[in-house]
Length: 232
Image 1 (tube, rainbow, N blue to C red):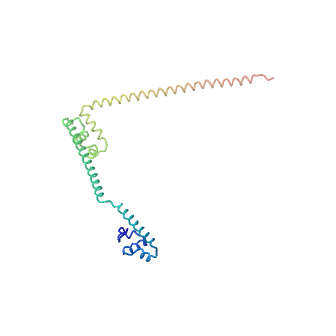
Image 2: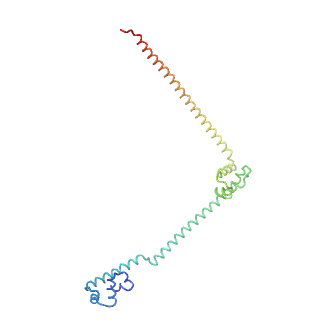
């Protein structure tokens, strides 16, 4: 037991345990310690036993919260591996995005570079050339200092160069014509319904007028007949 208690771990003991441990470390017997502390040998034995248990508990708890060097090294290596994996994943994503952008830009140039831009308006031409160089809509807007209409100009320019712009315009005009026709038919139907409603109201008013006129004439006739009855 006394191998557990030394000068370094006396701080974990109570005052009475500390006195008994110091006397024991000085080489005194249980009888001498009991006389100095004014207690029995059994009490001295119990004090030293509880002191040893206290030192053991404190020492084990301290070791529990201090990780070993190997464990710290494992944690450090694991963190370094996670950081390296994240960096490698980010690098692969950047490389993949750069490759896709290069392929897209090459496809655009192969498709449109040989075509004449004379069919485009100046605004369409500026937007199209920047787009052909690989700029995004946002970057094009910043360069031209505009915040809207980039997509419309670019789609129009591409359709003109692809030869589908006139066809698209015809489709748009046809849809507009159909919409106008549909709106006209709906308006005609609404007008017809309004006329029908007005006609029904007019017929109802005429019916009410005839009904109440007949009822009024009947009431007047009854009053007149009552006046003509001779008194007995």
